[in-house]
Amino acid sequence: MDYDVMIIGSGPAGLTAGIYAGRATLKTAILEKQPGGQMGNTWSIENYPGTGLTITGPRLNDNMREQCTENNVKFIQEAVVDIDRAADNTIDIKTELGNTYNCGTVIFATGADPRKLGIPGEEEYRGLGVSYCATCDANFFKDLRVAVVGGGDTALEEALYLTKFASDIKLIHRRDEFRASKILVKRVLESDKIQIIYDSVMKEITSGSDGLVNGAIIENVKTGKKEKLDLEGVFIFAGHVPNTTFIKDNKLFKLNEQGYILVDDQMNAGSPGVYAAGDVIKKEIRQIITAASDGCVAAINAGHYIEEEPFES
Ligand code: NDP
Image (tube, rainbow, N blue to C red):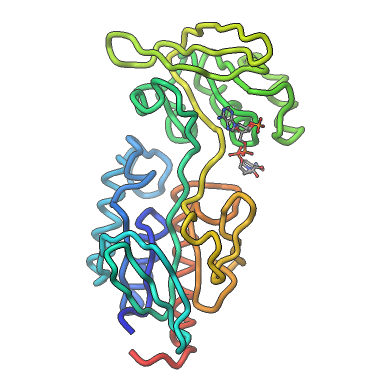
């Protein structure tokens, strides 16, 4: 066996799992496609306990990685292409470089990416007015005008959160009916800061000469009429896409229709020694601290499993 624990993904869930597994003296490696991820791309984190008033995402990411290294966790930069149960009940992990790593347990923590609208300006102005996280970025939009795109629970909750900061919120939804829960819809309808624009999609995000967002073009899907909105921020909540494509038909994991991994309260993904943690699992609250918590639970249980199973190291 090459490792007791192999962790796939190096976001806060994977890194926390690494810290816990390493500290428990389990032989641990983290396989990563590339360092960074959602946390690494967040400019400022103001709600992670114990880090001072603010910390940048890259800094928090570096700190967690350093803690892994201090606990003898090895980082391997190789994309995983397959995971399979070996005859002796261990697990084989195959990578794109043609390597196979054999391990006792696996913790799958590949995260999820916000679903993109794929419109002009979205990628260019990310971090310059375009955001996928109101909890992280709302504070930068005090007394400014913003648009929120989406009609699910996240979009409505985040629009309500933004009312504490922004002066004016336009909620752009592509239908005339929300999929969000009734209570959230009621609160949004009652808010005097939120104006709902139904049956409309965002077609383009524009910027001024300073490179910051200064507006968006929306189109009514029923009439085809286009309108330019003047605003400083665009928050996009069009759902998430979990990074589970290569385990879609893998028997070691159970996925729901959206591709999220189903786990029990011990982060077990349905097969002995197979755990999942963080944004890749089906859950409701997706924050750095909840991902870290999942990673901790998965690593401790992976340790128990290794102790109980008679694997030869
Ligand atoms: P959802 O998939 O529920 O909603 C995504 C929203 O984005 C939908 O309104 C959808 O429109 C819209 N959308 C998708 N693609 C596009 C596009 N290309 N252009 C414009 N709009 C688009 O995602 P959420 O993140 O809101 O929620 C994910 C899960 O988490 C849900 O199960 C939700 O209930 C849960 N959740 C629960 C919370 C709670 O209970 N407090 C809080 C947050 C999330 P359409 O409706 O037309 O499909």
